[in-house]
Length: 79
Image (cartoon, rainbow, N blue to C red; front, side, top):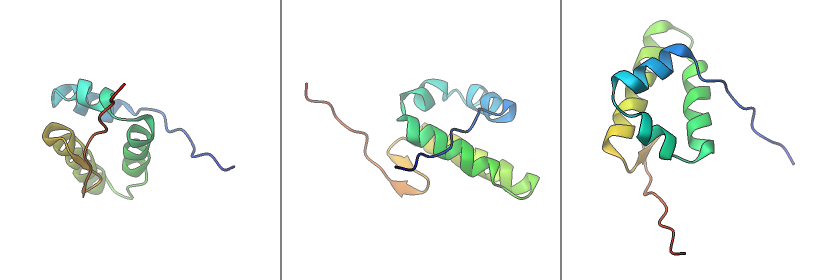
């Protein structure tokens, strides 16, 4: 079984989460979403693309119900 690599949190992403007031929203996301966001941002080829991706992540976290440009309703636990 293949596992996704775990991406460490870059300082600029952590700062954007804090500056955007979305740290709790980020922490509430499943691990795979948090890891995917960081990996996607890390794969940006240039600074402008990286800034755009960070901005998209912060915006999606602020709005909720969106993940990587797709509708994504949060899971509701019934237990």
